[in-house]
Length: 152
Image (tube, rainbow, N blue to C red; front, side, top):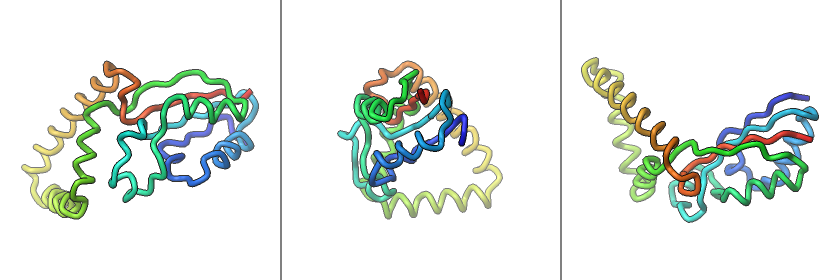
């Protein structure tokens, strides 16, 4: 058994999420913590979700209900990715074209030192924006959510 179970962006890939939560309960010690992250808001479900193997996105109340059924105590939830992650929805418009662009950028990153330095600055800047976005954006409108539960 374990004192801590992390399921970071896992449940949405599992067809029977009820079974997954019962397994988390089985392997978690009494007083242990379950920390999960999931994509949020089914209204944002897209072709991209299907492509990457998501069966669903979750509403906050849905996750709380699932874990309450297995007698977990809810401790906290917070946003992980805010509105800026909606740019990932662009990928669902033309996934093959976006994949080609990503491969091109990856190769450019590996082969061009100047591009690599510029790209690293861009990543640092966008990461900072995403942290600010997640901190100040309304949880109800987040693209991904984190939850912490205690096994009673």
